[in-house]
Image (tube, rainbow over all chains, first blue to last red):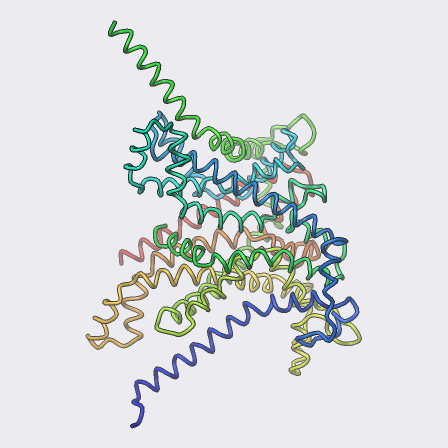
Amino acid sequence: MFPNKYKIKNAVTSTLLHIFLMAVATTCLFPLFWMIRSSLMTNDTVFIDKSLIPRSIHFENFYLAWTQGGFGMYFLNTVIYTVSVVFGIVLVSSLAAYAFSRLKFPGRNFFFYMFLAAMMIPLPGAFVPLYVLMNKLHLANTRIGYILCMINVGLSLSIYMLKTFFDKMPLALEDAARMDGCSKLGIWLHVALPLARPAIAVIVIFNTLNVWNEYILAMLLLNDQSLMPLQRGLMVFQGSHSVDYPLLMAGLSITVAPVILVYLFMQKHIIKGLSAGAITG
Amino acid sequence: MSKAIAKRLSGEELKEIFGNYLFILPAVLIFVLFYIYPFFEIFNLSLHEWNGISLARQFVGFDNFKEIINDKVWWMSIWHAGYITLIALTFQNALAFALALSCDRDIRMRKFYRVIFYIPPVLSEVVVGLIWQWILNSGMQNGEPIGLLNYFLTQVHLNHLVHAWLSDPKTALTCIAIVHSWKGFGWGFIILLAGLQTIDRELYEAARVDGASSFSVFKNVTVPMMIPVFVMVMILTILGSMQVFVLVLSMVGQGLVYHTEVPVTRILASMTGMSRFGYACAQGIVFGGILMASSFLLNKISKKVKQE
C-alpha cells in the first residue's frame, strides 16, 4: 500500500514545525549553556578556547565567586528578602482579602477599588518620591525598608486573586466553625487559609520569582554591599571586575539555578496561573 | 430598658466593625505609605525645583513641564523606547503567535516546548543582559574575537559581518531590542496559546466541512476570535517594553552616552545624576501619561475594529 497524499503532507508539515520549534528551543537554552560553560574556565582560556566543552574544567570558580566575589553574601540576602517578602505578602493580603470577601464595614468597596486602581495605573516615576520618603523615614539602606517596599509591590494583585478565590468558596464550613465559637481570626486561620491553598501557591510562586529578580528598588534603596541581593550584586561585581568573565558567569549561574529549579518544579502552576490570568483578564 | 439594649448593641456593633477594620489595617497602612503617598507626592514634587537634600523646595509651577517640551535627550529616549517597543510588537509577538499556532495542534513534545519557551521570561533582566553582553562582546585577543557571535561569524567566513555590536551606536539599540524580544516571546506564546485553546474545536470542524481552506479558517475563525487576546498582549507589550531599562544598564551600562537612553534611565539621571528631583517627577508624569494614552488609544481602535 502507498501512503496516501494527505498523510505525507501531514508528516512533512509536522517535521517542518518540529525543526522550527527545535530551533527556537535551542536559542532559549544555548545562552544558559554558554553561561555555565564559561563559568568553568579560567581567565586565560575563556577568551581563546571556544570549544563547547572546555578542555579543563574549573569548579573552583564557584567557590571563588561564593567567597571572594561576595555571591554567598548576596545569595543569603536574596533568600532573606524573598522569604520575608513572600511571607509578608501572604499574611497581609490574605487578611485583607478575607475581610473584603466576608466581613462588613463601611468603605469596604472604596478600599478594595483603591487596591485595584493601583494595578491599572502605570506610574513609572513613582520611585522618586518613594526614595525621598524612605530617606525621610530612615528606612533607606535597611533590610526592613526594602522588605516593606517589596511587600507593597506584590500586595494589590495578591489581594485581588485571594478575594476572588474567597468569593467562590462555600460559606458552610465557616458557618460551622462560627457555631463552634470560633473567632473571626480563628476562622481566617483555621478554615479560610487552608482552603485557599491553591491560590496561595500561585501567589507564593509568582512573588518568589518577582522578589528574586527585582533590581530597581534594590539599586535605589540599598547602598551597603552587605545588604545587597544577588541582582544588585551582579551589577556591582560586573562594574568592578568587568573582565573576570568566569567568576561573573559563576555568579550568574548561582543566581539562575534556584530560579530554574523553582520553575521546573512549579511550571504546571506557573503556566496554569498565566493562562488563567490571560483568559479572565 | 429597650434603649439600653439598643445602645449596648450598637456598642457591640461598633466593636465588631472596628475589629473588621483590623483585618485590612496592615494592607492599607503599607499601601498608603508606599503607594498612595508617592502617587500624590510625585505631582507635588513635579511643581518644585529641589535637589533632594536641602530643606527648601522652590515652587516653580509648570516650569519643569515646559522644560521637558524642549528637552531633546528626553524625546530621543522616548523614541528609543518606542523603537524597542515596535520591534517587540512585531518581531516578538509574530514569533510568539507562530509558535503558539504550531503548538495548538496534535504535535508531539508540545509540553516540552511550552516548558522551554517560558525559561527566558523567568530570568531577570540583569541575568539576561549580562549573558548576552558576554555573547555579543566585541573584544579581540590575538586577532581572534572574544565574543561568541563574532567568533561564530569568523568561523563561517562572514568576517565582514564581525561588528562591535554593543559599542556601535547604530547597532546597540537593535541588539537591546532583540534581546528584549528573546526574553519576552515565551510570555506572549503562553498567553496566545491559552487564547487559541479556548476556541471551540467544533468551529474549525464546521468550517472544514463547509470546504473552507486552512487559510480561510485561519482568517475567518482564528483571527476574529483572538482579537481580544491580541489587544491584551499588545497593551502589555507596550507597557513592558516602553519601561525597559535594566536590560540597557546590564548590556551597555553608561557606556554609550545618549545613544541607548530610554525614559527610565533619563528619570534616574535627572534624579541621581543631576539631583533634580522635581524634574525627574515631571518626566515620570509625562511618561506615565504617554503610557496611559497609548493603551487607551489601542483599546479604542480595537473596539472600532471589532464593530466593523
